[in-house]
Each structure stands twice: as structure tokens, then as C-alpha cells.
Length: 387
Image (cartoon, rainbow, N blue to C red; front, side, top):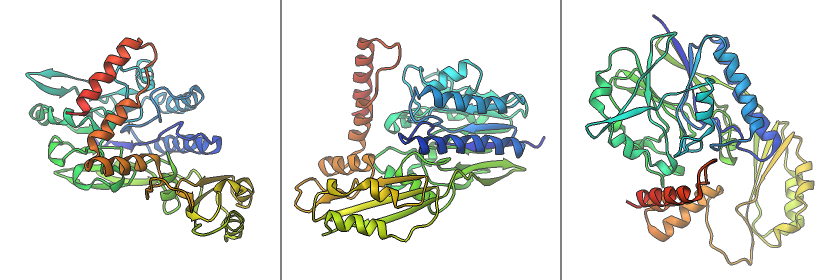
């Protein structure tokens, strides 16, 4: 029986502080679900990071649930695994709440059999397709779960099968994830028709045995780097239909990117140069200003600069802009995660363990979790991160 499904990942609802960008992110998700309905997808797979945090803002959740209900009310299902952002060690993530409410189906369940981890299969009633998968954890710590997989049991399961996870593949991990543990391709169970993954915000698809291994990339954007990529090409999701995957673009607004090297410039000159840039009509303008300026960045009238761009939203990135006389640690990165990685790399050489530990220490106390339990959990996960 022919079947089709949509493979989404890295939606990051609630990622932005700016209301306009948060709205565009939500709109991209709503458009994607509409496209899944229009194109006749039998089910949707979300391979992690549906939300940007385990317990997102309720207004964001309300919009997402209303749209997902439109899909599931038609007798179709949405299948989800944890991403590193919506992961909760106590299973108190919004993903778990929506699973209990029947809005979506969390598929990464399993048991230990003779020391091996055996994920359970969930069978889609509409198509008979079987889905199994693994949840992500913070800092790429799900690698241990892959090492413990009962490969034989997964490979023996008969029928059409999809494996869902949220991890980079070690063999072609992008530079911005070099400090996070990836999963060697050899640890993926064999014999699946499709391997639906996320976490890597870059589109990639290739044959894996007789099946497909796919990363759709971010659905829209979660940070400045994602927005920069949208200035070059649109993002979207994969639609698997008739045995072949097709990339479906999602248009949630045009993005234009601008850069200014402010080396040696005064605050007045920086402001003049930015106002004089030849600008294109776009929904979102990204403006990255970097270099050692001859003056105080705080003296630039940034609001006047933003007003000179003909866009609904202007996103200024000044992370790499500094005063010429300033003495500070110098890094080339623009995003906080990259800065952390570079500094830890300089200190320790291989920053992977330090990054994993940092991810653990950033964890927040879960709703309903006692302080003593939270402290004990952090200690356990910190110890695991340093092994």
C-alpha cells in the first residue's frame, strides 16, 4: 500500500525574544502543517526540537496545538522524539504533556533486555508503518544510548520501518557542532526504510543501505546563524511520497543580510555607513557589525540605524564589535554557543566534555521537581558528562 509522510525537525517554537521573529517562526510551522494536509501526508514526523525549551510560553503552545489538531482531527498522527532543547530528564517536558493529551505521539519508548536498550515500535494505524527511535539529551549525551541499542531486535522487526532520532552523524558533522558528540553512522540500526533525524541545521539527504538518511534542517530559524542561511535559500521539510523524498520549501518571509567591518571607524562613521547601505525590500534585515572601531559602540544611535532599513524586523548583531583600545579575550565566533566552544577549546584542547558539563549546569529545575532531587540529578548528569 503506498503511503506518504512529512519529516520536520528543529522548529524551535518560542526561540526569539523579538515578537516579530517569534511570530514568523510560528507562522512557518502553521504553513508547514497546512502543506502536509494539502499534499496528503499520512503522518508527520518531528525529529526533535519542536519547542525551544522544555516548558515554552503558553501562548506559543496554544497556537501550535490548534494547528496540530487540524492535522490529527483528520485521522492522522504526529510522531515526535525529544530534541536537545525540549529534553527533560524527568519527562516533564511540554512534549510529554501533549503526548498525554493525545495531541501528538512520543515514540521513543523502550526497555532494557539483557543489558541492551530495545526501543519499542509504534505502528501507524493509517499506513501500518512502524516507527522507533531515541530521544536526544543535552550536549549529545544520547551517544551512550546508541551504543547500547539492541541492533539485532530492531533489524529483525518485519515490515516498513522508520527510525527517528535527533543527533548529528559524526562522519559529516558541521563545524559549529564540532565540540558536541555525534553518532557514528555504524551505530544506526540496519534495514530501515527511512532514518529521520534533526539537530543539524543544514539540509542533507543520502541513501543508507536500502533506505534514506535525512536531515531537513531547521524549519525556519532559531538564531542569527539560521536567519543568515535563510538569506541564501528557503528552509522547509521533506515529504516522502511514492518511495522518494521531496524537499518542500516553506516561505515565512524574505531575509536580507548585511555586513559592516567597522575597523578604525568612529561611532558617527559607523552610523553613516550603515544608513548609506544599499538596501533591498525584505521582511527581515540582518545587520552584522564587527571589528575594532575607534570609539565607543554605545555612542552609535542604533535605533536610527534600524529605522533606515525598509523591513518589518531589523536584527542587529554586534557580538563581534568592540572598542579598539579594549583588552579582552578575542574570539571569531558570533553566537554564544560558538564563543563558549572556542574558549573551552583554548583551555582544554578537546572541549566536548566541558561542553557537555556546561549543558548540564545550564539545566533548570523542572516544574514539580524538589530542590534536593534537582541537585542530585545535576550531580549524576555532571558525573556522566565527565566520564
